[in-house]
Length: 248
Length: 248
DNA sequence: TAGGGGAACTTGTACAAACAAGCCAGAGCA
DNA sequence: TGCTCTGGCTTGTTTGTACAAGTTCCCCTA
Image 1 (cartoon, chains in turn yellow, blue, purple, orange):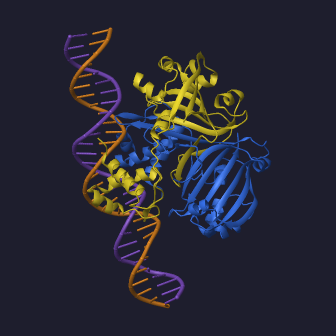
Image 2 (cartoon, rainbow over the protein chains, first blue to last red; image 1 turned 180 degrees about the horizontal axis):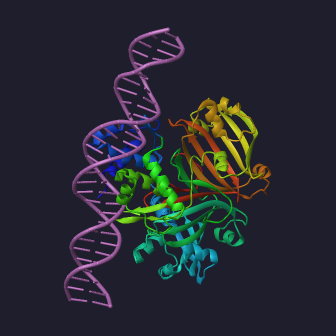
Image 3 (tube, each protein chain N blue to C red; image 1 turned 120 degrees about the vertical axis):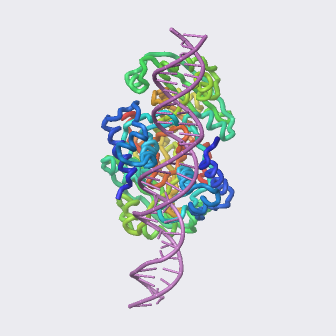
């Protein structure tokens, strides 16, 4: 059962995408929408709050809401899972484990993952037949067995872990910057050493906040970009100075 | 006058940062909080929704909310303004206009900015005395005069334009990726040609959705990173395939 | 004609109440 | 001991009401 406000949001989104409410135009007032959908004003507010969070509409007190864009951005757990993102966008993609081994955790890893032993996996992932991503992931020990049992060419690790042990990657913290390709990365990605790579480092946790993995992903320049919309007052993305530590 | 739910959120945030509610612990239930603050449950929900949007707490239906982190991330309009971000974090910073000229808009710019003539400005910005950012900004014609009247070493363009013409940069759309430094960028930033740069392209608009500027910012690698928190179900950041076009 | 003053409209905040849906621990059973 | 299952707790959804605060635009006046 989908919530009412989500259905209303979906209809409004549709009206925006199809041009019923063109970019730059005013959205009907909350009262109008409430009447049209026979819903309470609060429910309508939840719906338009969704659209505002997606960056489709902007609002400010006293003035009618304005349509800001019409680009459909689904963005589910897309930042977590390369495979889910690629599939949702209709890309051909693949993945291959290059190396995989257990080892004792470094001090930093032990602190981050609350784990003494870790499983380190190096994966190479491709998009449309081209290698685009080198993924160095360190899993906490309680996850290691489930990961080791995955096939080396597993397409979607996120999905496989959900199916096998019911694990949900619920929260993530990400740091995005640029680095030069080292010799190894360069060979894997088929670029020259020193080429620019887009790096995404992340920690992923369960619903309970328990750390699952720590990953360093490097994209070939030009293959992938990150997109974000923000508005004054609600701004999820933040700039950081360039020292490398993740935690506080 | 600050809203009630914002004050409650501030108190809760404080309790999280100071360890009254440690990372990993459960937050009191909405009913408890409502009683403690003598507020309605709806008001408390607005407060914790703020914290959830900041990534400080996670929630799922049926279970108590859990404290996920305690890093204070203010993130106001920080993505818009380099100066505001730097000042808020106590960095020494500066800026200098390198070149500035009016010209007719290219087809792409005309479409993006809804403007036939544009003002193109190249700025070099520094952090802690080191050049870290090359900013190539194209302003719409109706903005050009106000920008031209700014001093060449203007610290905060955002702030100056607000003071002079009351302009508010309300919404932004951003694309983040990595590129190699060209000869010009390399010279300005003091790095070798081909070095990795973190690129942020953005369109900024007013409250009404009117485009103000289109900018291509390039950071020296290692100087700045972007940080984001996400949770399943609420994910503002999105990955995009690597063709360069901004719009749909 | 330019400007001030409102009135009407619109979004933001707050409260109250009820039910739905999901989680969890403890009681009870095999 | 180990399992299920139920009942209480907790968050999610929806409706309704009232007032606050900001915007817009028209009308009236100087």
